[in-house]
Length: 286
Image (cartoon, rainbow, N blue to C red; front, side, top):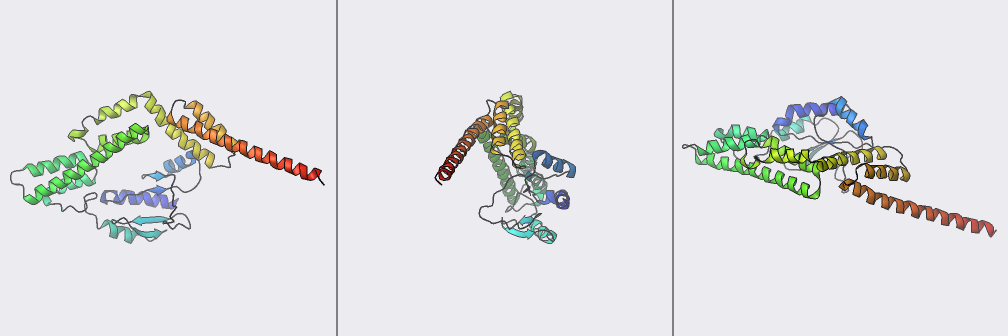
């Protein structure tokens, strides 16, 4: 638990300098138990509940464990403690987070700072303003163009993610993506209609039921997985879920999963019955 508090300290100290912390909750605890830890410890960074390491790239013999991924995308540290120096060395390579490879001129430092703070609309506006000045140098114009292009790229990527998520019915991701655009791209021309899009989704009862069902499915999986649940427990839990959230895509998935589990249960019962009959025959033949 002490490691969680240390991560909070690092988040507060280095977030503005380019540090991104992602926690991996590797223990099988219930949703409520994890939520209590997050609330009680005041965790301020994303916490992933599932992770897969099929390739065995992440050396993790004991918990807690820490990995530092450098600016080149490679693991620079793996262990428990004593990583502050490596962390600071990597962060020292980042002057303006998100703008790697761009030589920022003095006239565009405020725009670069806004970009690093993820105030993309402000960054775009400041960059354009510096570029539009009559006495703007070629280096400034070039840098301003590069910053604006980075903003455009971020916007297009987020918008594409939001649109695809909506098409797929993943409204949790869609809402989060649209809301991120709304927060980060204020005064950005192409984002003018985003607040209306967010409001429209939040006012749609079907959409919000899907959102509720998504969270409920994560919770029931955690609840059943955190204890010694029988196949009947899973079947019962999924059936109840499917009835509660009838009409949602998650209810359809739960119903399909129930069918698979019931088929597995039937096959196991038939196998058991067959084994018992074989045992009786052998017993009778003695």
